[in-house]
Image 1 (tube, helix red, strand yellow):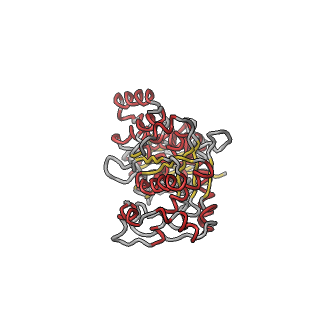
Image 2 (tube, helix red, strand yellow):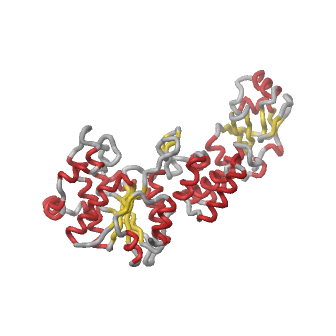
Image 3 (cartoon, helix red, strand yellow):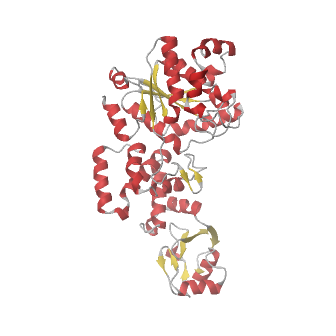
Length: 419
């Protein structure tokens, strides 16, 4: 077993692989590819597994190819789908493809060199291929009986499967053949639901070119509670900050179940075995501090959104959950809070606490505001204030213009001073 395969198995990336893959790695650098579906503007957490798999391959000296499905995206992969996807226009697919490219660059080095990643689009060859030529040169190598037994096909037969989606396996196999010919690509990776499609390509390369090719698929990630990975109460978690804010992205990871955090650290960060052992010891010594979740959230958010954004959202999270002094926060942290909390703009410096509570929406009337203050339920910059006649101003404005109000344990508001 090569060091790479051992590393991938330890991290949990190996669900199934073709025989002889370890020997194939041992013979020298390999070119490997993974296909990505551009039917959405942004990648989501489900795409992290194959991206991290390609990252590990590149770190070990192998060349990754990111294949964007500008051609196959016009068809739609039936794998894991209960019904056929709506077909997108070529213009929509191109726009999505371009937007996803920037997200890929957070994971892979697309520079030069033997291991420099390549970004390709299968529309380049699929749209140029003639129907008759494709049927003669590719279709003749596939048995309909065998295709019907593939999970991605058989799971949809009862609900119905169009010929458009039925042909997807042939198109993906043809992609593998094209990359084998043009870039000597001998490995395709993906999720376990892609095993049938990937091995179809391995088979096609063997039949047409008498060549050796391999498949490696990772398990589909699920949570210990049985929920689908990558989903939150608000829906799917995306890598695009315009769709899922960096703060919400960070919170997804910080809320990881204790039962999942070790496996997520292995899969979605580059933590070493020794560092993981040390982190596990910290977790056992002080589980309430959640050092493993904090490391996971910080590492993944840094990779996807950058170190500066990760630092700001981590500080904003710690302020709201009582582990960070608001007065130590800079303007960038309050900008994060302004995106996540009910925020009201006010003018001037001086403001009575009662008026501040009302302006922040934490009370509907002065009597309600006074009552909340008297009962000790109002906090200014995370400090309880019980004086009904108190005023806010001067040094209460943090980072020059921000006042954080809290009612009870979880009800927040942010006032931002103008001018």
